[in-house]
Image (cartoon, rainbow over all chains, first blue to last red; front, side, top):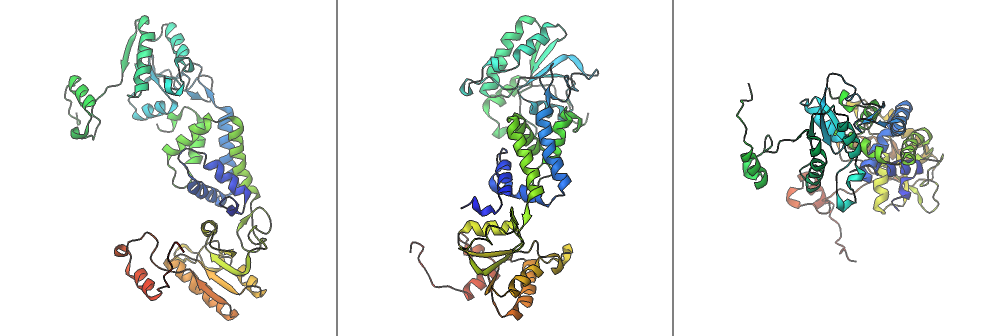
Length: 207
Length: 207
């Protein structure tokens, strides 16, 4: 019933494709499809082609495993960055989040996942060997682990610590504490406890 | 800053294209793009091609102005439908909504918009001449106006009533009343007043 009511198979196919995107239901997919129908042909062709082109032509940086249009990504080839500092993250999205803070000037290493026995993801599925080979070259003095504070994130951090420790380099992790705008009353005990242990010198914000 | 941080122009282009969809921001667009990156090449090519194909090949029914893959849409060419009853709607989406109720067995007429002087849409911009030519053929006995209860919807309904009245056919409109699941207390006065005037015989739901 629902399927036939589209009156057009061409529309139906597009609705199904768009509904396969994460968090997009059939109602939103239909709204997207009808929006595309109203756009000029050239724009829709550009839309479709850019998606296909991205999937076919995108590469992963041979150094840090970040997505890139070139063999070595713009971050790794930027001479102004501190090449002795490497931030280890789970995914491409984490790199983009950290870049948006404007607070980091080192390089990255994208694991491409996180150790999760429940999902069948072991250390061998991540780009850990690539990270170790970067460190073996001897140019890296600090590895900065920016992983989630979940069970899987902590497991991965601990595994990496064990593998990286023999190299005698500095291993750091992101600061844990109460987030800006968070209410102490509603902060969980572990976070609040840690933020008391790791209390920091007070610096006025308008300094 | 934000633009360059994508590290890939291919990704950036796709994020911009996806962010042009209605209600999709850059964060969702990035999520969609990274999801597409993880899919097999064939699937992404199917995705892109189906969008382009829809835009290039879709036609509008020469009878009712509904989108269609063929010159006459599946609804208009369905012999089991009551061809003497025509439901006039603003858009393609309204046809799909009415079809989903499973309560309507007549034909449709898609105006392709609604009279709105504020947006510069006049009667000449809508497929009203096509509707009149269908009625002139003499096969239609009832026109059922299913337009929104907005100012523009009421204006359009009144305009159509004036144009259709000389043909001496039945002109009906959708019933106004309190919606299922609505609380009487929170129903506006006009709706509640009309639903008292137009009170209907009580039919138990499990009948």
